[in-house]
Image (tube, rainbow, N blue to C red):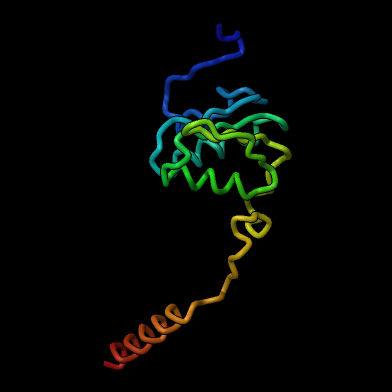
Length: 140
């Protein structure tokens, strides 16, 4: 049967998970299979990842769904997580080290190709036209 260390909390995870007093300090396994609307899977991961012990497992169910695939893609790319196995619709990741500080977006591989301030040519054209139109309106 289920061990005495299993606790079911029958409330929405976006309400329960931010309230630390209801979640153990250290987790062995996190199974993400709640609300699938964006950003629910990311919220579930965000509030449990720091409590998952090194070597612990996070299971991401229905990972092919676009709103969940974002989390799957993130975990697949980052060095703190190791994809162990995929079984049907569930991907199993092992936490191999503590995640980077989320305030350091530049340290995340998911952001490695982003260059702040760099605009594409269409973006520059749009901004240029917008400025020109605004100037004409203001001169009026």
